[in-house]
Image: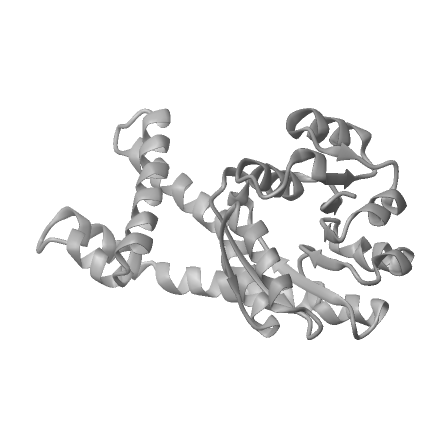
Length: 266
């Protein structure tokens, strides 16, 4: 009997498998995976030593915990085709925009379903995930899901009505951060730095600033004021960002992503 199974073996499944194996939550032999791509199955089995299933039926017959890591458009189809075998199992979905009720309506009111919104930094163990659960889930079910996603970063529990906001902030947020790193490095190149140097400094600067927020617990405004000396270089740059609507642009970007996530959920 395996302990956990993954239907879908994309990048996020790879990140989660890598995290739980590294943390020792599950032995590779306890993890079973299935994907339509044989190349992905072969890659993950050779990389982590996990067990390949010949099909979803074999996987669902052997595991009590199932992580659905398929694309949102096909998740309802996958659940509907396997609803008898999914009965009684802990079902964890990482499909963006798919509400818990979509799965519960197929599996029944007693279905134990947890919806998780992870993000791509989970690939390097620095993810930020949020989860919500169906009414049938026990505290043990929630603790199990938290332990899995805490293996690839931080994981918090929220009401499901807030998950679309998480999708917009931490799900889409890495793309906004990558754009900011690129823009910072462009500024460095414009000022004379070699591209590779500027990019390395920009990325390290963003990482360090984020670490200060998390580790000190201080408000970002307080930390910003620690850098902005009177009549100094930083306040000149801050003034330009304020004049160009930097804050409102970022806020509007997150809210636009939120509205799109709500549209997809419908």
